Length: 175
Image: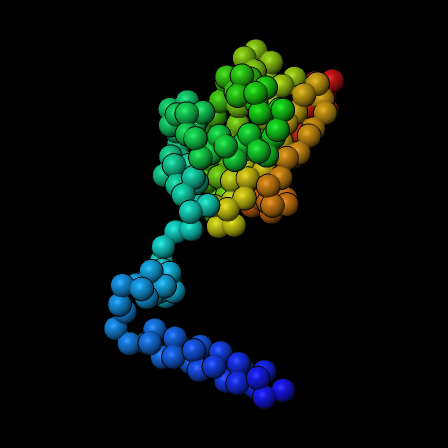
């Protein structure tokens, strides 16, 4: 029993000595440890999160088309769209031929693209909520609608919601 007590005291003394020496100026043995335990510098509140960076191109391009801004060459946005649409991404990219300029209503952006000479039968609407870093895509093909949502449905402002309803009605009549 005395042996275990002595071993415990020695272990505690060693740990205490090591802890005290790490608060003093680091020597060569402690410099790696000190570097690994350094407190990270806080990031300023105004810094844009990395996930929002991919939407910056769209926010500053209102009034231009996807082709004019090189949307399909933007790796950050296309990576998000590929993840969102999966196997349907290739079809979206191939059929995004006739397009409208990017519109903004509040923090929500709208882009549309469709197959040449077949907008009623093969059309895409993309909504981007820049405030919540969320993308939704609606695909209208042969009168049927399919929805893709990154983080759930974007609550569309009144004007964009009306445009979506019109597109839904047009798709129904084009069956």
